[in-house]
Image (tube, rainbow over all chains, first blue to last red; front, side):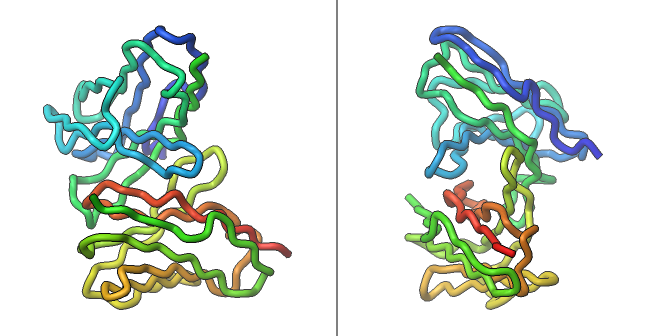
Length: 114
Length: 108
């Protein structure tokens, strides 16, 4: 019962470095999402993919890029990391991009940028 | 743009009591509102969904209400237990917005 798997679980970067956060789901879901969670601010949507082959910006897309590699995988890339991107990043999936569908979350990647 | 607010950052109650958490939104009423539970170091887990034409939804010891006039949803946990201690998030998924959450602590 893997559900949504995120790698890595923890990462420390230096300012200006790049990295890719990986996400994979095994529930045959069509839609996938990337959020960041900061204290007191709740989850904020970075990018989402309503279906394989499509991606769209969310509330806070600046400084990030995404790739929907296939139906299972949705990666998030930081091209030039900044301290403001220190956060916990969550990937989620849902059967389809509809407000009556629950989202299934991974356990997050804790990213610190020095 | 739509804002979603969970009034209490933290709520402490005694075991056996009913916990009531509040979620308010600012603009138009969503067609659906969802509630999630998040444990420390884990991702949110879906609990309940309520539709705008439903006044109340129940699941075991959980009850959610939805008042479109007040632009508010209430989340109740009856006969609370220490295992209910967690952060609870409300979400307007059609806006892809989540509240900041209320951290509930149930003391034995």
